[in-house]
Every structure is written in structure tokens, then in C-alpha cells.
Length: 65
Image (cartoon, rainbow, N blue to C red; front, side):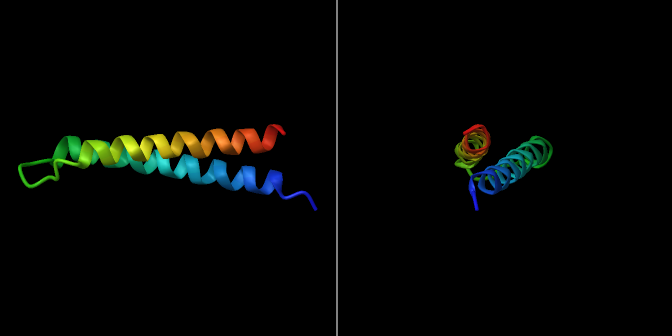
């Protein structure tokens, strides 16, 4: 059995979920951020978006092979 399409679909699902949670967090922070918000939050958002893009790229790559 070829596992590559299953892995590709799972990676796509994880990537879409990661990007949607990053966007949701960004929108929430835009409204509710104050002085107690961590100064590392922009770095966390960028790394979350980057990981989502990486998961999407790996998923698309696995489906195209």
C-alpha cells in the first residue's frame, strides 16, 4: 500500500488548521492585546504561519509525487 497520498492529505489538513489558528490568533490579538501581552507573540505568529506553509508544501509535494 502506498502511504504517500494519505500522508499528503494529513499534512494538508494540518497545514490548513495551523494557518487558520494563526489567523484567528492574529485577529484576536488585534482586538484584545494590551500591556500584559507577551512581547514574543509576533515571533510566535510568524513561526506558526511558517509551519503552516511548510506543512502545506510537504502535503502538496507528497500528493504530486
